[in-house]
Image (cartoon, rainbow, N blue to C red):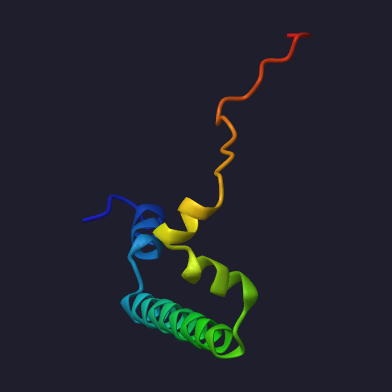
Length: 83
């Protein structure tokens, strides 16, 4: 039992409201599923239109690699001479 009325009030206010929690959790799940569906629709539209960037990525195969020389840049950053 709480010792005084203030402690009782703090305890009452700190209890999680399950109805609000369920509502917020359901809303979060709905938003996540909506985003997934929107992403799938967007990707489907891009594939149907024949987006050039997507086609280049899909066309990237081993035979293409042999024809074109690969000039890879080093991933290391050059150090500044001032530092």
